[in-house]
Length: 563
Image (cartoon, rainbow, N blue to C red):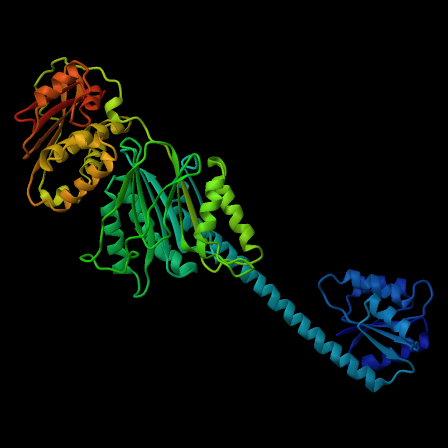
């Protein structure tokens, strides 16, 4: 330990130096305050014995300036003085002195004061080391946390959400959120969305979110039905999560062309649909238990579908938003949320709600993760109203024997569970069919397959769709018949052929149903009559080079240009 002695009296300097050296300390000296500052900078002593009354610069000023040079290192300064009035003592403390030693010097007292200062200095050094190690650990943890957050965000797929269509907000109670928001536009242009709230908080809950988001994106991309997505997610959660853990979830599928919104709600607050004027059009009250509670046999896949003709906004939130307590311990509540949303203009609703929640919380922290999703619903013109131009040029029936052919047969069980259009498109990509053609091929396959399934196998009356609320009733009836289907067969054959040097996709679909009056439908198309009860045929005719129905209307052959 090195001690600096500052005094303008040589005798005092000699007396203190002699004592300190006998105690085993190294000693450096200075004759006044100004010299003391230079010696301190050069020698870095561990303790300073400072006289108060000195020429050039007194001990008070020297103490203040030396303290300003110590930075984060604690160097105790003991003022050695005969002054004992209260004002001078306070002046020394304000200057930065750590203790006083009265003269004449009592060396026993000096010994104890130096011993105490030495002990405090050692504690300060250890504390500094611990703080340094803690900071290093903190910096490393923050770096790993940032990396984990980045990985989680990519796995969950937040970057896939289109901000023009959706707005989302998640406020976790810890570094990681147990809530997840995901959205995907399928090849059929249907918008799928998911808001899931895992029981629990932090990293443990966030890890449970990962498989949910991955399964959702995979199935949504392939256009799988909302019921099938809910069923698959429930089975995975039931199988993989610990007992007592569950996931409150809202699943949404929006078809802008059929102008429908389909929702499966298992344990989340009611999603609400609000029109442009601030009127609540519909609320989807939860009718199911959260994912993971029921086994596969007991799980209810039924969804609720409504038809919406005009633009609107769909808001979905987790219970953390409604239960968020302000400084008055009152929850934010559903009534307050509806009031904020209905009183704001459409463009300001999302921001108004998040601002209102922050204002409600004040300085309070939310006790649960909070998530909010807003979807801009914009219905499109029905396929039947799209202008079309018939193409009737006859093509060669000669097939290229080297081209590929895909044949599929689907029985009643698979008709209800497989997204056959998505699977065929994925396979066609492997066969080098240009992705730029995927959208049109998807539309053709979807319309032909849906017509074969709905009109042929399920025997649904397409005219039902034209009645008030007809689409909702039609889809509900369709879902019911699919769930109870015990017979029926659809055969699909798709081939890539050559005709006059051009590449064509030949699509042949046949079902075991009773068919329909295809001759009348085709006649109506030629006369541009809109009195057709079979969906999608005008659009298929517009997109394809040729379309031919045969038999009782249960068999169709189309040719699609690939070049």
